[in-house]
Length: 237
Length: 237
DNA sequence: CGATAGCTTGAGTCTTATCAACGTATGTGG
DNA sequence: CCACATACGTTGATAAGACTCAAGCTATCG
Image (cartoon, rainbow over all chains, first blue to last red; front, top):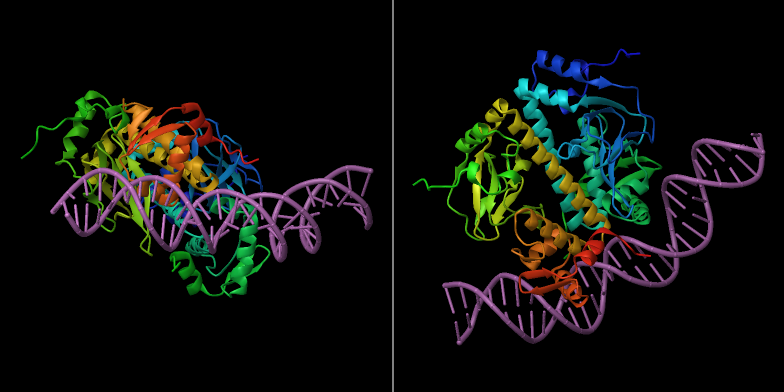
């Protein structure tokens, strides 16, 4: 029944996750409230909007997309979550999940019952602090994304997206220059507020300009500098 | 020196702010760490990006805009904050303010030194919970804004903006149908990712269609239903 | 009183969406 | 195992929404 699952103490990404700055005994305590279920298959839902909020989730491996559905039925992807990232924080305030989360590939997820986490964070200052740091970081990241969506052109958005992914893969010990896009072109387009066709065209354009090589889902960044420049600056003059 | 300032206990908007769900004695405790400085004048800065993070701020009256400046120097407004709202939460994770905040009109602000708040939240579970709820709410709101910016046309954005403002004024006991736009057209445009000219044209269009009346900075919503429909739905077929 | 910031309106342009067609891969049921 | 359906991706042609540029108007302030 219970798998001999990895513990927080030995989890390779614990420094990207909740246990940051905790003492050994505190991590053990945290670990004891965490549930680890069987892997989510591709396209399996982690939670749906409207469901009662019970737990937040930490991605252990794979990739989870979170998204909302507007009243008019359009999907808006709000994030692609890699190992170490926390999902479900938007549900704390209302007690119901406003968004949904779905696995983009086979993924392992740690379930952290919120009422237990809440109680534990009363006993462990470092845990309380880290939770707040994680939330603060998400607020900050969302604001950067707003800037991206509001002020940048289509190619700048895609470049920034690739640079961001690259950096996040790098932090996880994977290659910064060559990685797999787990999400579809449609997902990327949706996330960046573009049409699929535009994303497709931009990939070919970036490739023609020698910034990247792309073969199906595998991207290789061949000119990191130029890609960074494109991602960061607006030179419309 | 110290003004005979309003205390949290008697603050009219304490139920929109941090003291939610706290016992009388707990509110007193919270109040004791809060600093109330003299009002900010219009265009005065509350903090600048790059500054060391020392405190979060609660708006007591007036309106504060928060914004970031991209590497290429463009301003991106991330929010207009009314009474009861908390500013500076994006700085917790890094210890430096990534954004700036400036008063749009004469405004009163409560300064809440973060290290004191942090310690106090170790003693008062309800305070810890409320802080997390406030942050969760901000994450949720930012995600809604992303949807707005990504998926909606210019008129839908402006309509949604007005509906949102209306609701927030209503919660503060002010009229939902008639209020003042404290921000300039330029600020609105920036926030919504549009050009000033577009916002100006849309205001006149909304007025011609009988949804609103606008005289300088004063908006009157004359057809709430239609404005709501426009804000919520996408009917491009 | 002039200067400046904010707002409005018009004309023209450009980026990106939309529509359409086609190619490719994957999986399913007969 | 093949035929078919479906999802995903690419490319081209066209159209539209929003931006840019330009001009003029109003209000505020020193």
